Image (tube, rainbow over the protein chains, first blue to last red):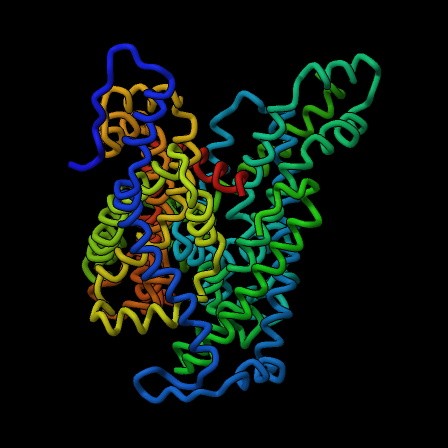
Length: 317
Length: 277
């Protein structure tokens, strides 16, 4: 076992103590060995593949079966690829709706629970639950909720029950409703998570502040608007950034519900990348799209950090 | 209480409605898994099953081979957790508790891995695993999951370990303790909480993985619960609703049990991960 062990006198002077700490705890070899397993796995299977993808994005075809250098041709192709442009539009719509829903409804839900059911851990536990469920289980569950053939699914059955037959739809099959159906699923899934984030922020607000406002005669909308929401600003900022980041990377929930269809109505850029690389066998172009997705995430996260987090020390990227 | 009594009533009602909106679909799925085909054909889908029909589960197991998927997911997930906890805590220790020149850089290096979209490595990892011969194996998943699970684990461990008082480390050093001993006898036992949080959180992340499983594996006998359920429903989904609901329920129930046992840790871990970014 390495690590220099220093024999120390019974009465240690500060410099001896410093020396002992420095020698045994600052043993460079030991630090390197402790870091090695994680560093190695991460380097080989995360960092290097990222660099390689950049490399592949400058090529066409599949490595092994004919990889041809093509420079920035694939990047130029991005601009004229109508499906890619459609996927960017779909991603933008999806992100806007889902972030608004998850953050907005999450905040609303948190306020209501904080106001009316503060002592109920059960409600918070129940509502958080969907986010730990496997996405395929949730997706297939929602397929059956939205179903129209051979039987009416849950939503259509309820519509018929209350006499709203006119609204019965093939929610996933119909181009104009598929994206909203997807958004509802994803909001359903994560609303509990954001509710809990905001709830954690709410309970850290000192009750005395609120009581003082109440004694001064402030009504509830003032208390919420002028005291609670401003105090929640840091949590909201973090939640929005986290939500944006997660939504731009959305892939599994789409595969589980619609597979990208009907047509390209729910094809997010992440879905298109997978199709390009693995269904159509274009590794080079798929890598190019992947680089685009990475840039999307970096830029949006950077901008969000800048706009939402005032202190520059909190800027991550 | 602030606001009026009616305001409180409104809030309570809305909360209960929203909670029901979240919980009901899951309850409905479990109930539907016990319906036979006549229940589906004759009655509206929100009605209760007429009897407890367990044949759907038999079909899901025998024909759908759900047990194989559970086995594969377990083989892919549990070794991953072991690697993540060991390598992660080992790496977090110098980062959090030892002052050396590159510690900030190394931490940032790992942290970039938390935010990246997986799409950026799919093509290159596919080629790497092909060359290693691990394509279409569960080993491939173990390696990939470990690699992508390490950044979050290191972050959580490092954050937690920072609270270990410096005095403990210093007196250990004075007593002649080597780094390895300090790690094994002091840091690790004191980090038990962090270990449990990391385990709970990372379990759900990798047990539920779909993107890597669908990219690297297409052999049916190696499918995990996510890809397996997708394939199972693909074959049966349109016509046979009962077995599909049984399959979904079989996938949901273990997750549910684990979640309700560990929920505090899972929630803590996920929120810590989100807020500290």
